[in-house]
Image (cartoon, rainbow, N blue to C red):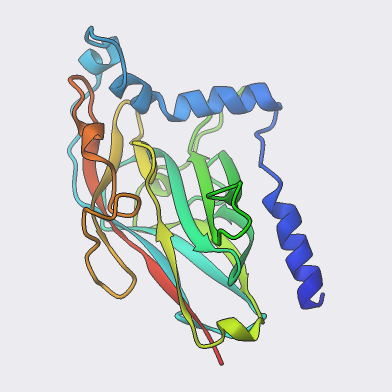
Length: 260
């Protein structure tokens, strides 16, 4: 397929959204299950029953990193992986929100990674422009929602090993533009925050929402708090009386350089 054909195919995929088996109702049910922890966190003025009965969770610091080849040839495909490292916590789901420049990097598709593939039961992928009404905007997003066990009629369950790092939790497929204007440029592929549950994991029970505690760019530079969309969850996300999210992960972005 030539470059224009690839670009057209990529744009068509941008318009699609993965839906769980069973249609829209099943998708809504699974989303509600995955973000049970967030629902409790934002709950009413009374103490939640789940908040009262959930077993204590021992939180260890883990790392979530985007791994990608630092140099890619113009017009060629490449893979970016989201890795969960250095943790022993059992996880039940994730909600990942990434940002990229769609003029330079064309998103093709996303799948479960080596750790979760064939074990976790549900993955929804959505992508589009961050500013939909601005024809000149270049920033686009990718949102991936994964669920380990959707408690379906088949009653199958993922292995315990697939629910704890280290391992690749998600894999994203891109190709680099062959536009000469982008040759030699280094471009970010980074985590983005707008909501309290962006770039979060739920524990196995679904009662605890685990979020970022520190962020660094692909070159190792710390991201300052003033960068509100890339510096992690807002402080008001933690000012909840009941079942506030727990800081558990150090996030690291990536950079991609398009060759000459």
